[in-house]
Image (cartoon, rainbow, N blue to C red; front, side, top):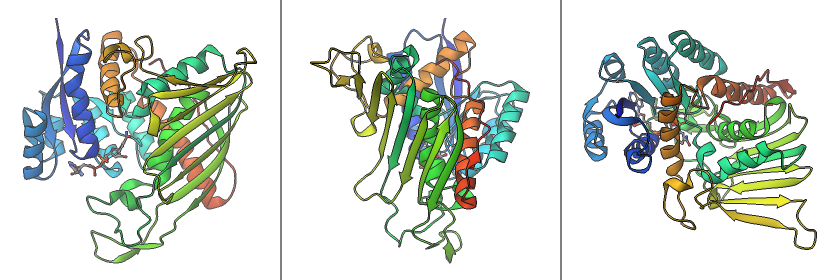
Length: 387
Ligand SMILES: NC(=O)c1ccc[n+]([C@@H]2O[C@H](COP(=O)([O-])OP(=O)(O)OC[C@H]3O[C@@H](n4cnc5c(N)ncnc54)[C@H](O)[C@@H]3O)[C@@H](O)[C@H]2O)c1
């Protein structure tokens, strides 16, 4: 007997599309799940835009005011796909209305906002998850499995980059519906909350808590026209951020993110070096995991390039046949499936608001370190939930 989870999605931009695609594909590829998503309603402020989106993706109805969506008793779960400045207000209202919440990352603009969100879901005891979707790419999940077996031995280094180049043009504005990421009021921060938050989530999932950080940030274009005011205003986001850190397990971390690396569009990479082996991964070749095992026969030892497409590798028995690739969008399909599975099992669907709050602590420590030019402790209390 199937059970329905009636989704109310807020925001129909980039993430609105990836999530909608996830909900639509899950019943076909994860037919064994008891819970199945129903695209009940979508919300955006523009009536024209939201009706077109509802029709395109098969939502039964629409709203133009998210508060009305939350009030509806035919909605079980609220999915927050709005810019970062809306996350806290919507999530707190949704929790108070007893709805499950799936929230985009970063959890909030600041740690203080994130704390209110964690308090709200704890108080209401509602199911929650945050879309740090890269965990659910099969090669990244395989990296986690290898790390957890202890095959890498003691870990010495973790390094990660997230490089883009889309804001080099100094004539790009800030703010408004398109360039909200460049406006600190809407985004909270620049690359730290937008890109490094992903790197930090994956890093702590794979390698445990980050204890302290030392960071430097730069804003290369100091002023940009603001779309809302029409005035040239100071840019308050970080265009680039580099930090190094200590992990709780004694390893050293090195992270870099920028939107000024000409030629790089979304180059997310990580590498882990342990006593017995190393792993590395690159979003531009997302089905591959590279693995060096120092315990291999010395004559043939070298980096293995594992094409993660076999049925006994994470998630891959749900898709095609061995050797055939899947893509970026499947990470969202997998997160929907894992969320629905967690409703059956009663377990948390990681990363939860609490997990994303720990990531937010690191982001905040990074920004504080950059402005104070001092090392900052994070007070992270990292414990990895299953799944
Ligand atoms: N997990 C990931 O890899 C990933 C990737 C991109 C973005 N994100 C996150 O997803 C969120 C949305 O980003 P995006 O790229 O989809 O942005 P976007 O600009 O493409 O879409 C945002 C949507 O929110 C809508 N919106 C804004 N204010 C609203 C309101 N008051 N009521 C209803 N709708 C409103 C806009 O109309 C738009 O449709 C951000 O928090 C971002 O950080 C995550």
